[in-house]
Length: 277
Image: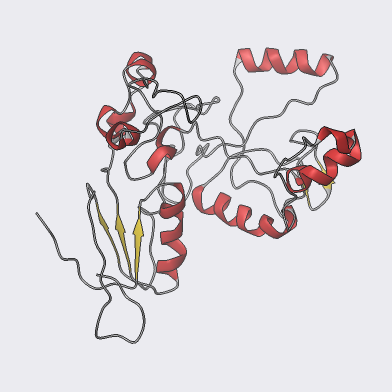
């Protein structure tokens, strides 16, 4: 049945990786927010380490976004629609598809911002296909670095820095761009398998390092650390996933309305600013 929500300053539709993160600075700035999410909250027991359920039976079955939106797939514009598998990775839930994105939290490298100019410099202009629309970014990593840093510390990313203000640390990613400080938490522990692979890589002259992950390797901002932080990537209920919406706090009020699929907005007539209800 239709529900009229109270007037608010900002409405965020979808509480996934972008919407969930946007709520925190808005509420901290004193802006009232209502979040609309088509899915629901998931409980810790929804993250049971069941490989059959998670990988082959469409976990979590009730919130698969694409299965409800009925996308179509074609090899080209003239091809008939091809059948799609029943399992699709896009999710409707508080947290969105970050619920099972393996928690890998990489930054772009400096080279990624200059892919055209760097490709031409290193490999020659002929390596850019004719008619390609790829372009260099209008700015570099240094402009995004403060925002990377803020999100890593708000969410809680574990890892080993390889370049802090230009100082190289061989324990981390020595090819990464300069970061302003270390990760907020130490990296995931290795396993006998990853240790063996790392030793083999070093013998080849390579530089293995623990990857960054949104996994709490210790207690962090009121959340318990992961019970077994040994490359614990994938859906688990052991203290990893965190939606910034659940931690959103500030002088402003914020509300979350779940299982919302149809909605409409109208201007708030008694205000000189644009408001939604």
